[in-house]
Amino acid sequence: MEAGHRNSRRNVYMIINHNLMAMNTHRQLGMNNTAGSKSLEKLSSGFRINRAGDDAAGLAISEKMRGQIRGLSQASRNAQDGISLIQTAEGALNETHAILQRMRELAVQSATDTNTAADRSKIQAEVDQLAKEITRISNTTEFNTRNLLAGGLKTIFHIGANQGQNVDSSIGAMDAFTLGVAGYQVGAGTFTAGNTGIAGASDFGAGLTAQTYSIDTVIATAADNGTLTATGGLQGGVGSFTGTYNGDSNQVLQIRIAAHSSGTATSIDYKLGDADWVTNHAVGDEIAGTGLTWTGSGTYTDDDVTYKATRGITTSLTAAVYSAQLIDGDGDNVGNAVTFGHSATSVVIGNANTGETMRISFTAGNVVTSGATDATQVITTTGSTAASIGANGEVSAKATVSAGINVSSQVAADTAITVINNALETVSAERAKLGAMQNRLEHTIANLDTSAENLQASESRIRDVDMAKEMMEFTKNSILQQAATAMLAQANQQPQTVLQLLR
Image 1 (spheres, one colour):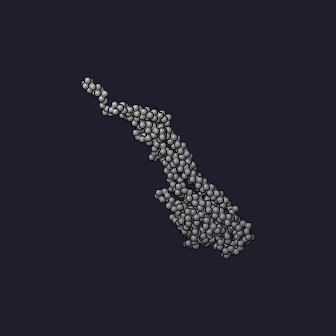
Image 2: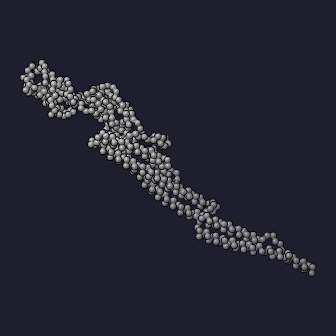
Image 3: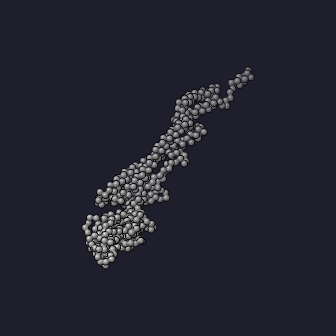
């Protein structure tokens, strides 16, 4: 009996070291919780890859694409900023164009001699103001504090996501001086050296620079202008000779002997065209107002002028014709020499094609033969400069202008038309260049936006979460979490059975 009782007690004895089912259930619950957390993170962030552990290779590819996409987006904004810069410059040049057209109109108006000096002075005043406005536009047209029209602007538009993907552009100086429509305020000064008869200078051309200019004056030789020789016979005891002077007046000149001595004519009378006879004109005197001097003499064999006159007589008249040559500070001739007659009071000398001209006034009777420089004058300028550009491309000194292109005379205005035409062509070429660049940048923006859109779609497929698929995963993980929680409770109930035996 006792032995049997001991065997019965051994059969109900149980040893419990661990709860394997509960432990396994708890492990599965933890895994479900982790999976559910990841699904919740993906659903809340919208990304399939939130950390490198989610997809290391996919993360690397995605980040590279992101850099490309953001670079393309910024490049598109850069190109748009470039268009804004170009539009700012082109808008200013549009007004410059309008001003130049008005200046050209004024030059054409001044180039006709229906205008008086007073009229041209008013035209010149408007041209001066227009030139100042051109320079003001050049000095003040800015984009993000950068001057656009002063010259030296070289822009680099970065229009790609990677290094070196640039477009270069530049805008030339558009001030009045650079365009050639700025004039100089020049002091006439006082001529020195020699009895030149030159009184002063005026109507300076825009091409003159600040240096000393000389004026060389000479009396033209017979070969230069020719010598009039009048021949004929004495009529009725009075010498009368008729010829044509092709000099200053191109008029018929008549001469007759008024007095003689020992067979030599000592005095003449003369008239030009239909004018009255001028009597008792001595040999060697200038024929008043013509620049002509009687230099010859008629020789007779006896005192009977009437008789000997039938044998003929020859005398000559030489024209006092002058020339003036403008000479620069290096001693080089500026333009061609200008020839003028005795009756002239002023003449324009220099090179009209380049605008290096000045008008000189004089008393012709005082002009002397020189063969060398007779008159000098220092030509000084005020204002009218281009902007100074530093090594960094920034403006160190603004452009200045004190006067517009010279249109104060017929000659100057006629020359100014060509100069203004050249300025118009320069501005047109610059505007055309800017317009072409703007069109290019517009196409660039379209290309960049398309590339960014396509890359965005590709990157989205790598990194962005599939909401429907992930919601299914989240639902599954939620169900598994609930099931694992219930099973864990069941597994934890098994040890309780053993505990009941110990009560």
